[in-house]
Amino acid sequence: MLRTILLSLSLALGSIAASHAEGEFDKVQITTIPVGDGVYMLQGAGGNIGVSAGDDGVFMIDDQFSPLTPKILAAIGKISSKPVKFLINTHWHYDHTGGNENLGNKDVVIVAHDNVYQRLSTDQFIKAFNKAVPASPKAALPVISFNDRATFHLNGLHMQARHFANAHTDGDSVIFFQGVNIIHTGDIFFNGLYPFIDASAGGSIYGMIEATAALLQLTDDSTKIIPGHGPLATQQDLQNFHDMLVQVVKVVKPLTDKGLSLEDAVKLDPLKNLNGQWGNGFLNPASFLGTIYQTIADHK
Ligand SMILES: [Zn+2]
Image (cartoon, rainbow, N blue to C red; front, side, top):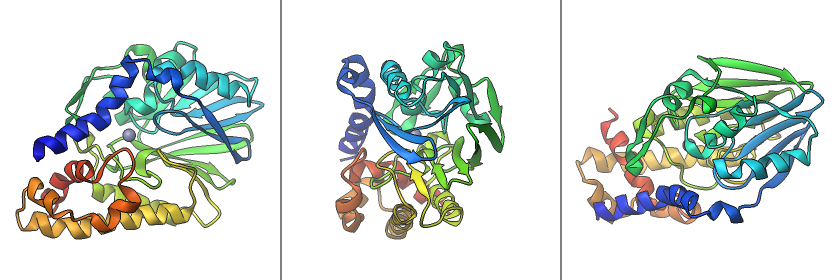
């Protein structure tokens, strides 16, 4: 059973790496969704991209996978004739930073939290997927990193990146488009699907619960929310996601307290009331349980 869980997990994530090799990205199309105030959400494969386009140039949040860079730049070219000036990475994962090297080579200034710089510049290992991720080449690395906040002033907007401690990883940033009520959450928020939480990079379901609670305080019912994955969202969607995480801990913690193994916990199907709504995405219920079980067991 455990082998099955791990296998389905490595398949879920491995499919990203494998598709890379097999030219699967050839079929990916980039969709541009206007959010308002010159801000756009771009979807293709991997994490959602945020873009501010205006007279001062293009400000970009995350960049998906390397083979998609030409298509992403073509999509941006349809909303702006200006070059990409800045790229911020919401965290280090390769489905959000895969285009860094291409953009760095075009003199785009890459910015991220200190821990993103640290992880991109050294070899990493994602335990949940049994996947080694080698250090990125120099052109892919942030040239500016920050420890708490960084604010970008262009296109008449003030876009503030704020670090949230140990949620999806140890280097998560949320970008607030100040005054226009738009945010990009990175992978602190998966809209409508069970999230991947990278425990081996300092992530924790408890940190996800704290970060989403903080974001609920910082948003209102007219905030437009670009999630790390899934469709453009509202505060209600974020509330639903937060409530789901709280519920997951509530039903799983008694099982870890009893000392149940992951295999035995999976047999009990503790998330059965949530799976219909949340378990049809990137991680199936057993895989999701596999990624969070030890963190919940270790939590006192
Ligand atoms: Zn991620």
